[in-house]
Length: 144
Image 1: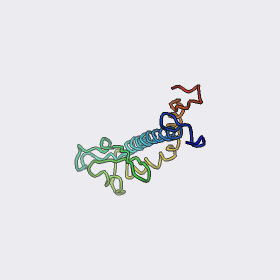
Image 2 (image 1 turned 180 degrees about the vertical axis):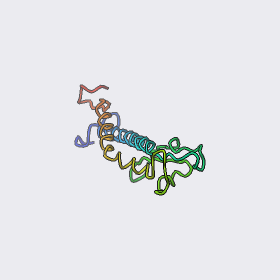
Image 3 (image 1 turned 90 degrees about the vertical axis):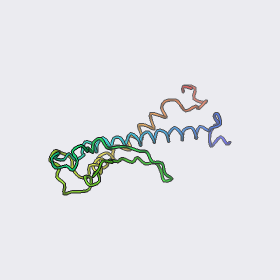
Image 4 (image 1 turned 60 degrees about the vertical axis):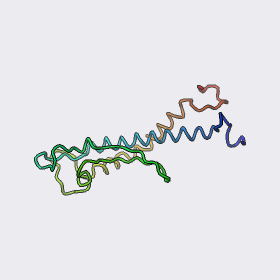
């Protein structure tokens, strides 16, 4: 292995170790961003009139979920609401919501939080690479 690529540490180069740490931090950040979108969407979720709702026992707020999906083009966070008529509540602009919330509750949450995503990813990567977990034997001040 050439010195330009990196020093081999326990069968793994320092570059490989850094890539693994950054990838792990990015996945953590993706999960955090997904949960932030979910919480924002829950604040925007429509609240209808219990007398007029098809099923008064169904609530969108409790049906939200975040799933990390791995695919060849890059990982993504899938934020879903799986309650009956969640899609209708998201897209039907003619529905009335007398007690708050409204259509496009999920889309509005994503649009609101997009500017925060870069900060979330940067803070997770920074936190992971600052911990001293990288085993570079040339840096004596790092913990092993």
